[in-house]
Image (cartoon, rainbow, N blue to C red; front, side, top):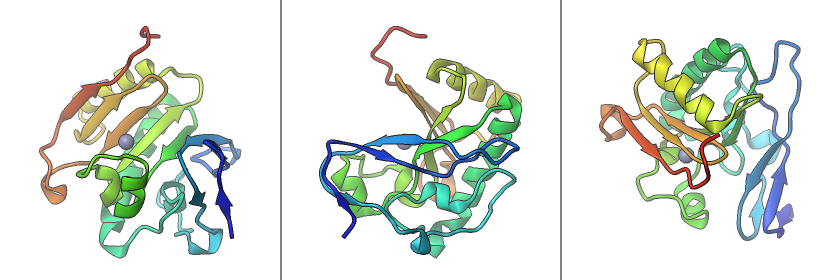
Length: 179
Ligand SMILES: [Zn+2]
C-alpha cells in the first residue's frame, strides 16, 4: 500500500529537465489519502525532447483516447521550454474523474482529458511565465488554448473544438501582489 496521509504531499517527479537531464523535485499539494501511481503503470514514452507522457501521470494513467491531447500539450510545453530556455516542472497533469473530484477540480477541467498542465518554470515567477506564454501565443508560436495565472503556477491547456471548449480562454487567480 502506498497511501500517504500528510496534508501536504511532496511528490518527486522526473521533469522536462535541462539538457543534462537533471531530475528536479516538484511539490504537489493534495488533501487526504492518495496513492501514487507506480512507475510500471506510467506511460514511459518520450513525447518531445524534454517531456515524456509520464510527467502528466501522478496518480492516473492517461487513457488511449486522450493521448492525442497529451501529445499536443507536451509539444506546446516544449516550445515554451525552448523559448524560455529553462526547465519546466509539471505540478499537475492528467486527472481521472474520481481524482479530479477528490482534489476539488472543476467538473469540466481540461485536466480530465490530459489536455492541461499546471506548471512552474525555474527562475521565473508565475506572472513572468504567464506573460511569456501570452506573447508566444500572440506570435503564433504556441497554440491558443487556455491560460490561467495563479500565485505560484500557471495553468496551460490545449482546449478547442476537440475538447468541447472554446479556444483562447484567459484568467487571473492571483491573490498576492504581482511579482
Ligand atoms: Zn490546471
